Length: 124
Length: 107
Image 1 (spheres, rainbow over the protein chains, first blue to last red):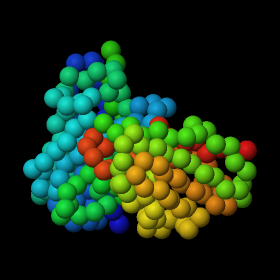
Image 2: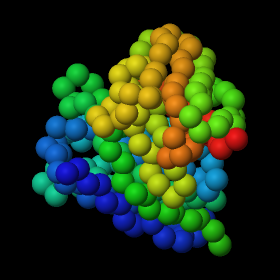
Image 3: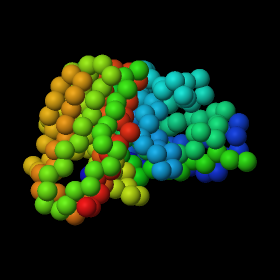
Image 4: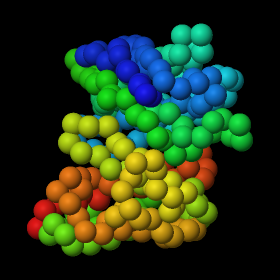
């Protein structure tokens, strides 16, 4: 059974930093790209970032580029989102989600499994 | 950036009726289009990918159609558990983008 478990969400002050983690199980982790998608309270879904199976390629939304870094440790079946220079508008539930397709011919496809999310609140 | 526009924002439907949800892309996404269902307090669930392929375990009352810029999600014979918010998502090009969602509510 595929499971994705996010952690690390807390209340942080503007300008602060935070690292989210997502521990995966139930699939061949290094074969699949992973993604972060966020949802501000009462709002829709916003893609944040994607990373390929090896961790060698990443893409970011313009809203987080230069502030967030997406990485993975395939030996621990875990992905990380390092979030720096946090702003009030980064307040959201952050979901990690798995690409449905194995990353043989690219990545950033439909997302077939999602974690339950971790809430990040940026406020003074 | 490809902008995804969903309509209507809210759809009121009686149980047992059909719901038709629309999603329009600002430029062609070919068949790189997925639909998700989200219920309050839950993570999104993949319903449809490739514009028309049902994901594993999704009942046949959910169907997707379209290609290019115009897409439709149809839910035939709405059941109580189908009242939720539905999002479309294009993965044809970076950045990945989502529509604003359509809330399907009980009439």
